[in-house]
Image (cartoon, rainbow, N blue to C red; front, side, top):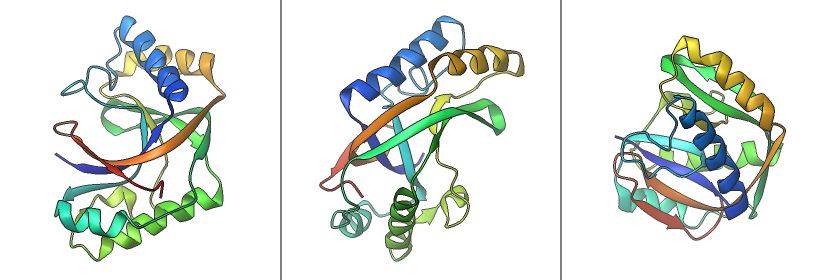
Length: 174
């Protein structure tokens, strides 16, 4: 699977995203709530690694301090290939710089960074649907439109193994 460097949301923000997931699941749309191991957390990924040495990754990321809590204002949705749909947050230049700092730190570890997370290619998103069919896109668009704008607060960060749900908290919020 993959290892992601994730910004994780405070309890009220995570609950808002989980309510969105639950509403979509009731309408027959698969979300992260039911994807793979079912332990996914609402998050924004700074980086996704396809191969890695966990000790090296932790060593370079744990000292990073981007300045603490992050506010994300989600204004709509974005549709990716293979039925992936996500909330599209507006970001400050500081948050973009934080993501680039994370990617720069990871470069020296020999980890295989997914090409969508390299400098200049990152499209920030908060995952919602994982395998939406074309006929479900109208439901997704209507449901997301009913909840945006949605302001989310990320107050912590962790490394998350997408295959198992295992987490390694990062002491700072990069």
